[in-house]
Image 1: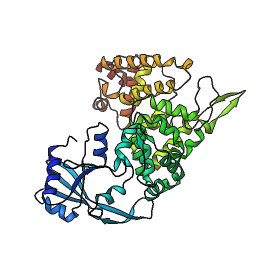
Image 2: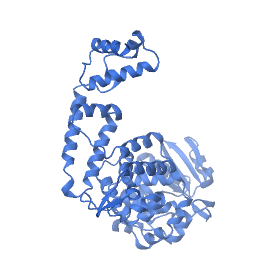
Image 3: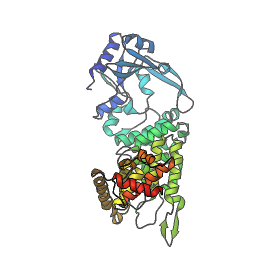
Image 4: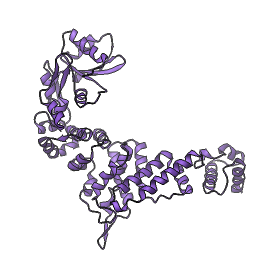
Length: 439
């Protein structure tokens, strides 16, 4: 491994004090996958107090003494050093009742979740691979260490971690591990909302989520129960060749991998099965955006998503099927309503939504691209579409005798006239119009 000098110095320092030290976990896995690690975790047979004594000249933070973890600030970087340990008696399907420190690297590796994460490396002695993790990396397989049922009953979060690793790496989940994930999916009720949220967001922002989200959709339904109705729900529309759930995944795949945009597409049509009507064999989904918003809001609040993200996603879902007009006035009004960033996100949502339709009905994508180009042109030439662009302000309105809420009303009125091309965005013209408004 191409190990940074500071990490090598930490390992050497522990060994010079007659302790064992290994790199372990994600950094070893990433290196074997051809990915340069960003973080390095070290495991050792030194007890926490011994670790602190070895690095007494450095800043040491006792971040998790109960679990044997000490953070050392070395060469201005934080490095976690953890004592070999065995986890005993998982009673809440998440956390061990107690931790026993060990002198054996075997004890430390066998408690880990997946074989690809249970490989240790020492610069002098090489790899310790007790569970054939290197071969699983070569074969692109995610497999539990030991018995899968035991691993998932110990810590139910591992079910979502397996799903997320599959999304991130493109690896397949080994059959016994996959069967156990589905069998034990009910244990996810013991996982906190925040951890479910974090794993979901990491998974959906990958390039490889499509197959895992289809294969393990029952697990996704444990996080978003309302999505189950979308499974295999035929839309019976000439515009749609995919069932609702497949359409959601397809549109997610065709938008930028940011949490806000991916979540928007995951939720944008989730309300369709709840409003479905059939007219002579043709499916209709009147009002589905409202129901999709309700489901999305409930889910995002349950997952403790931050309010700023919630508000943006709710806006995008609400207007995801709004007809977008390619006129200067329409663009300026929506640039004002949404703001520049969210307006372009809304166009991208429309593009992604169309990409998930039958190929004969994707013609609006070119229209949306032209719309995006025109919006960029409006912005680049400095057209007025927001209150901050007006050549007058609140102080001018106060000088004209406006007070309180009247100030905001008159400025909005002036902006509306400018956007409608009824007056020029020039100070004197605006002030004259404001005087007329006051009369």
